[in-house]
Amino acid sequence: MQKQSLTALVRQHVEIARTASTGRSAHTVYGGHEHVLRQTLIALRAGSSLAEHGSPGEATLHVLHGRVTLIAGDNRWDGSPGDHIAIPDSRHSLEALEDSAVLLTVAKALA
Image (cartoon, rainbow, N blue to C red):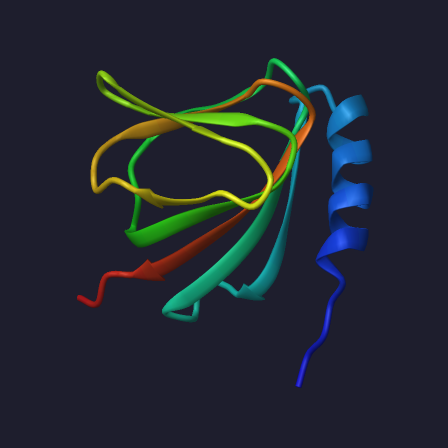
């Protein structure tokens, strides 16, 4: 069994994102490209974003720290700590309204 502290990872990766030229940092918590299920902690500096992109399968976003906005077309969902957002099956982007960290969970579609 593998155990990690999300609280410690949030602290670490928010700090990395604050000083990174991209304004973000990511860490695979569970899974990876060889697994169906993948969980990734993503930290974003205030004002930074993940550009519009598609999803390789069903996905959810759990806000761990800060405030974010998920955008898909004309739809917007604001999230703050504790919020759980189902990511739509369409192109979408993510904006950090303040220094933030989210847990992205993706279950890849089977071929």
